Image 1 (spheres, helix red, strand yellow):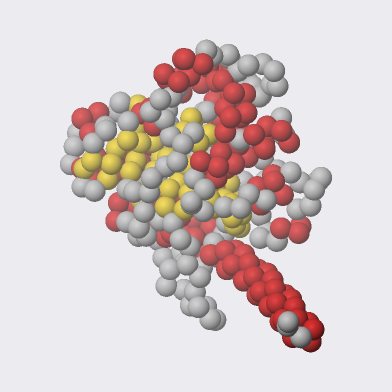
Image 2 (tube, helix red, strand yellow):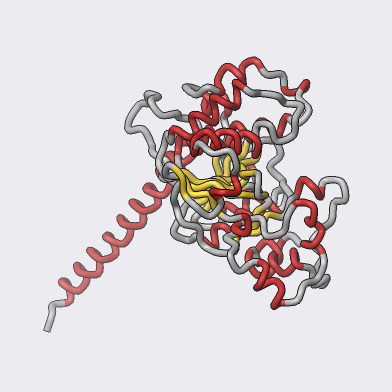
Amino acid sequence: MIPIHRIFSLVFIIGASVLLYGSWHMKTQQSVQTNMVRMSQVEDGATMEGPRPLLNPGIIFLETSDHVELHSLVMCSVESTARQNPDKTIYFFMKGFSGNLSQYPEPKYRLIPLLSSVKNVVLLPLNPTELFEDTPLKFWYQKVIPKNEKFWLHVFADGCRIALLWKYGGIYLDSDIISMQSMPFGNFTCAQLSDSISNGAMGFYHRRHPFLWNCMKDFVANYNGYIWGQQGPKLITRVLKRWCQMDKVSAFIGKECNGISIWIIDRFYAIPCPAWEKYFVPWKKKDVERRFSASYGAHVWNFMNSGKKKKVIVGSGSLIEHFFQLYCPTTYRNVI
């Protein structure tokens, strides 16, 4: 029979071990969160006190306005992507976010508390000055006057997404794309029309891919803030044509050239821009399955809705409501 004092000693040792592990785990989690916030503020080659944190490739979302309470579609995009890609970290860079989660309590704020509770979502402040350092976009950003720009937030976002992918690698998605299945890492762009390549969904797994550097150089050399898409899809299409030495994009859709895959239109743009309102009407199940059978995500064309302001209505049976219920149920329950 084991002496009673040995039993007490064993219980004490086990209890102390559990407490020590809990304390270590909590400190480790806090350290990781601290480093994650620093990541958005440190460019490659910068010096820091102590080890420089690394941003592992993940899926990147971006908000270039100063708003932190955003459209429910943004929440759905991030939530659906996190659910469909549980093995990947989802980074959401927000210009208006301070980096301190305690400054955004419920019920005053909904987006930040909701998204920060998702285990593979990391919210990060966006510091454009730091982001554009050591890139061709540095002096453009220093000279540009936002109030004089016709499409400033869109042009600004065009530059940020390229710089983020160049510095950190991974996948970039527009915040009006609802993810429908897991996406593979790799070097890819995606056609949105037979003659146009999108900048709303693209991936470059390794840091500092030369294609992205070429994009930033073209961004500056051919800058025109008065032409819609000049620094966006038109830029990606221009640079890709030179990269692949081709005249027509259509010949390369669904293929690879010089290490970059050009995904088919249906990967994200099964419903084209002129037909965007189809998201807000009911669909038959078989039609949904047929139309989106090859899709990684559904681009909802939120910019086109900025005037009409169509909403997700509970009980409407619309395609957009169906997608919210299926791919971002937490957003649907708490926000719609």
